Length: 193
Image (cartoon, rainbow, N blue to C red; front, top):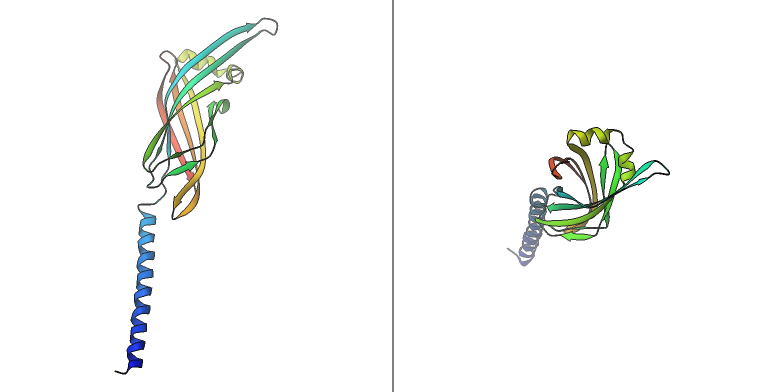
C-alpha cells in the first residue's frame, strides 16, 4: 500500500468513527429523553384546611349577613421529574359550584428533582359570593361542603435546554363541616410543554 492509500484509509476510519460516535450519542440522548428525562406531571395536593379566623356580623340596615373567613391551607407540591422545576408567581383558586370564592397568591420558588415542597397558604374567602349561592345551606346541612381547588404553575425545566412547562391541577374535594377535615379528594393533572 502506498502512503496515499494509507492516508485515505485513515481518513475513512476517522470519518466513520466520528459518524458512529455522533449517531451513538444521538441514540443515547433519544433513549434518555424518552425514559429518564421524560417530563412527568408535578402533583399538587391539599393536605389540610383549617379555619384561622371567622367573623360574623349582621348589617341590619341592609338586611344582610356579613361573613369573613380566613382559611389556612396546607398544600404539597411534588415534582416526580429527574430535574428541578422552577416556577413563577402564581395564584391558587378555591371554587364552589364553579364560582371563585377564594384566591391566594403562590410565591415563586424551586422544587428539586424528585422532591416535595410543602406550602402553607392563607386564603381569604369571599364569603359574599359563597353566601349568595342557595345550594350552600343544603350542603352545610348535609355535613359536607364540596369545593374545588385550581392551581396553575408556570415555570421552566432544564434538560440540556430550558423548556417552558405549565402544570394545571384541579382537585375536587369535600370538607366535613363537623370536624373541618378534607375528605374524598380527587385530582386531575395536566401539563403543557
